Image (cartoon, rainbow, N blue to C red):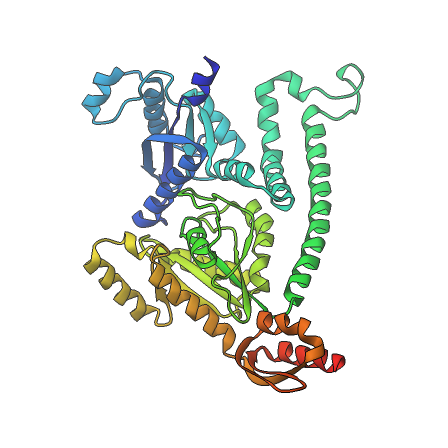
Length: 450
């Protein structure tokens, strides 16, 4: 019986206010994204309520009439026949709606009033995103960053929670509830501040360890770095798997993974290239998460080349492109060379529509690549472009390896491309193409063993 309860699908309604400054396209794109976020959490969105207002209602976000309409829908007052007359879809049962998802971050009092009036749980956009991050964070650093953001979100809401708890929540911790002791709310806030400070120290320590690991990785001979950046669900993980041949998680969900994944470009090239997949961007990312998750984009700062992945089938891709550029500028990655990749061209329509879209994109963004990560020939072209980028500064030279040091032969083939090999009585000569510092290091190493 318990198993059936757990497997029962959770059902939600979405509610949003459109302000005069928001265009219809932007509004609909935000709603679509919230529905996708809800899907990631396992909710089935059965209806969307929208309202145009000059400003949000101060007490409960939505206007009085719209709140009443949602209350009637959630409580199923009219029954199925009554809702059919209004042209709307009724809930399956009176208790069928589990939560109302609000497409903005609302204040604690607005959430409390909305919840009390409609008699249904309320989650604002920030809470939805935080819950997804909480579920999907895997590494210690990501989990710590998520916890900081969740605690920062909860702190100002403790007062409203105390109000709901009644006098018990406001009782002071002095003897018998008297004296200058802390209230339960003040005590909880202090615990939150202490925990945030503790987590921040942990993150500093983890950041230092990650910097050491990165330095060691970058010091390895013949390794170059590429970072995938862009909005979540733009196909970065699919492209990552296609470029590296790895079993990276690919799911049609927002924020399927939060942790940076690093793999080697396949087939391997000279120089050897590491490809990293960074956390995806999202519209209206909560401020607390912007600060917390910029550190996950540090991988982009280590890269010599950025692959900016954009969903060509998304009508709002231009705004997404601008936001990505802005954030990259904020973290100091504005001068790193990048290739704009318009992915998912196969989702645009038929062959004629795809061709028309590709021509339009290449006209507006001449240096871009238009492709689908599911088409091997187009992935191969991107692979060639990446390798060509890193080979443009390579030099050709000749190295001599005496017969007594042939155990070092593998290092030549690992870190350079061997163009020609010949031998005489003293050893082998290799005509190679490689990075200047790598070739110089190999030459010095071989001279020491002569």
